[in-house]
Length: 434
Image (tube, rainbow, N blue to C red):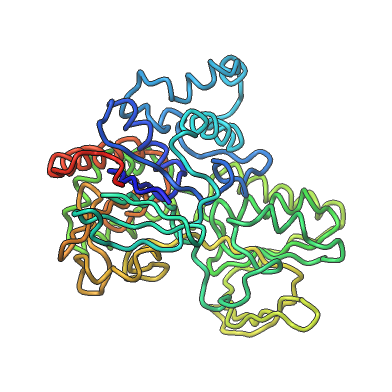
């Protein structure tokens, strides 16, 4: 057990905290820091690296370029250093392949492995008085401990598992976060696979399943009438400009809710034209061959779900407009049901799970959800050490914080500035405490 107290302990080392590590290095910050990550090695969306899938985002909105376009950690420099710049420039694609961007993330992370402890499963965080100062004690891998004056949670958003599927998660019912690992283990006897959702990821998974298993029946289930085109208007996409955060942050809850409904199609329950067209063409082409193995079950709500004695997934369905009932038996079900936000709303959670024992000691709204400040910090009601949420703040900061790369580098600039101010208030010198 180390008695070193770090100025910053970052939990999670996905793109958000990786961008923070870059900012800490490039600013020559005096802060001491360490990151803990549950994975064996840094990666990005490893369970959704599907053939042909792209990132739906301008590649210059990377880990660092909007903050520091001269950085060595930008996507363009990655292409140059790996000898793929001209191959990339010749690609007939609007956006980079997801697999290529994942390689970029891993390439950048490789420069910071000395700052990260991998295979580190954080079980709890608790405040305590240690050698005369208030710090966070972070317990991971059952018995290991790390101390930090500040926590930066960059754990990614919690998977949204609809209540009807609670208790069923496993090898037959699983979130897209675990898509490839479970699909690869699916027994050959499985013939009927379902996908819940109408997002970009849902369409991509249906396409992948039909290509991966040409002999299986694929069912797409969603409440809406059709797959909707993503709103890619350059005017709507100003939601991913930094000034939008300043506009959005100060709005009333009612105004935010109204704006969220208007802008939802830029990111949620919608898909890009290329994948929608590809799916429609594939269904049509199979019909020409006398096949009808891709079934679109639209206007459908799942009322009940259970796994029977044989391991099959049994669903009770309701047509949401005609109010008729039916049932469906599947061998596996993929939940493309998105992720939770910090808010008291459908698909929301009041606080990150790690803060469950302490959330009442921070400022909350009338519904009990954590209130996040403009600099992504939380306001403690007593003497708790500082906490920042890195990439978990869509409800307070808008769609640019919804797992998108668009504003990631500018977000960590705000966090780093606040961290530096906190350091100035710490009188105890940075040292290993015996």
